[in-house]
Amino acid sequence: MIWHPIRDRLWRRRRSRACPDRGGGAVEFAIIAAPLLLVSLMVVQTALVFYARSIALAAATQGANAGRQQGSTNDTARANANDFLRVIGPGLQNPVVTVDRDLADTEVTVVVTGRAVSLLPFLNPFEITQQAHGPVERWVP
Image (cartoon, rainbow, N blue to C red; front, top):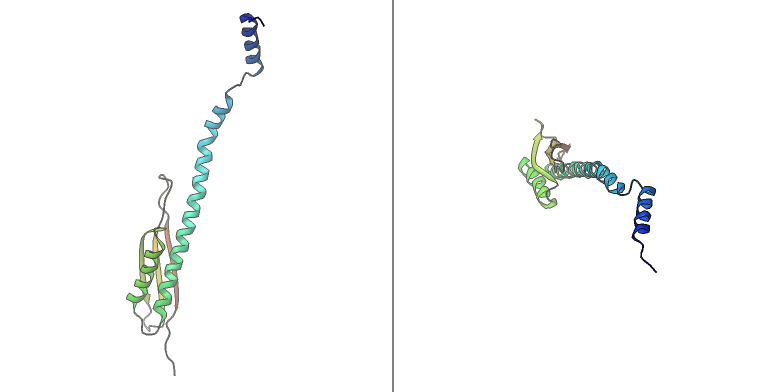
């Protein structure tokens, strides 16, 4: 077959007129990718906040259960909650455990506060506070 440069040039020109937005997919993807990535990170951030709340509530419950036992002290409840937080890992950052008893020593309340892990730098850290309380076990004749 004979090579015809003029015919090939006309064929290329005709093909480019048929598809004027050739290469537009890459531009559309570049425009859509950033918001899509942001929404994905927000979904993961929401999951991390709920995970931190779950950890704080579980630690408060563990501390309250230890503090409810007859003869236990506030230090026992605090140590049990801190042990749970140490074992579970870094899902809750900067945890603080507070244990309170009422004046008659019949109720114990354990409050765990901390921050959720933050993926998005422009969001303020999410402060988490969870508490658990219950009656102290005692012998009543």
